[in-house]
Image (tube, rainbow, N blue to C red; front, top):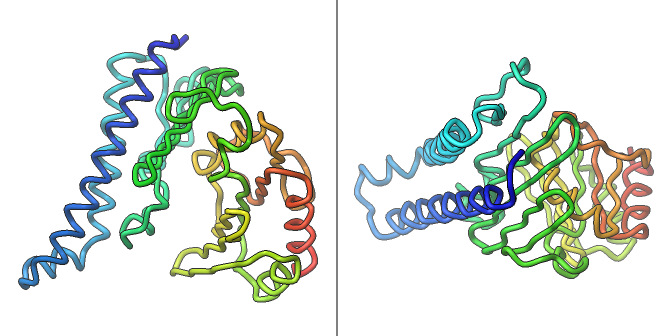
Length: 267
């Protein structure tokens, strides 16, 4: 069992790591602006390697942390995931850099996510957005924002509605969202697409798989304070599986119904 003091130590460890990767982002971007030599340009042109370095720093640090303090816990990282694990009693899912595209593009929508399960029950979780100084965490049934107890949904507005798809964004979805009164902004890269519903602070990621480390921490917190977590057929989502193909996280039933209606209408 992890004690509350150990949970706080892990929380602080994640906070330090988050600030380190934010500093790396700032240094690289500042260097690219100030230095225009050929070598620097070549260095910046391979920014993808920077996210790999950041992944490795966080990944290794968390692995070492648990190898010292909790040898009975298996760490399952996005960067070094093993489908078959020796100990399924305690397992910790880790995403060392969720939102690497935003990170590389000087954006602020990136985070470190980790969540610990005993069997199929979530014990603790930490999600830290360094650029926004938002540290969300939970320890059993206690929930925190920047180490202070979360009182209600107003404390989790930044995670209020998240919609995740396994399909491409359709223009019909955009148009229907506008008809329902949602202002939208969309960005697309080679691998997935993101749809932000501006006035409700909702983010929609479209990809082939949705890993548990992408949504479980904030999903568990949101659900505890009255949020709705389901798929496109309004079936409840379980948090202990590794992947899910469809996921809608909403702060209330109206938004949930709107989003699911639109998705199913144009699918």
